[in-house]
Length: 85
Image 1: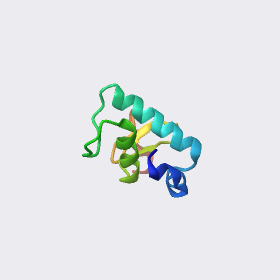
Image 2: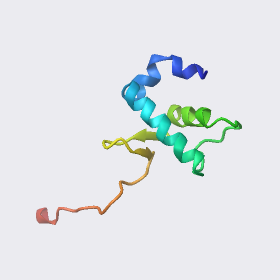
Image 3: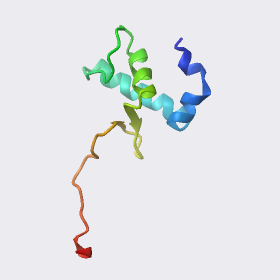
Image 4: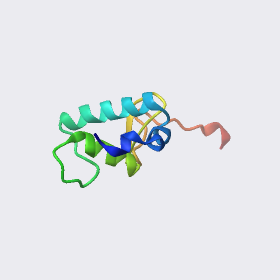
């Protein structure tokens, strides 16, 4: 078992046990489907890669519980309020 999962601070970092579980599961599906790891880690276990990505603030869940990479723009069109100009 990965030691970081035994600690309460990783649960708090993500926003709760449900969010941590959802983030791990969704990211592991992406990695197993061919997504590139966001960390340089020599391991055969996707779970270790996901935990390192969380610890290094590379991934998070957005408001709709979708996995987002740090610095990634939201999907969809960007709306501007031009009435203030």
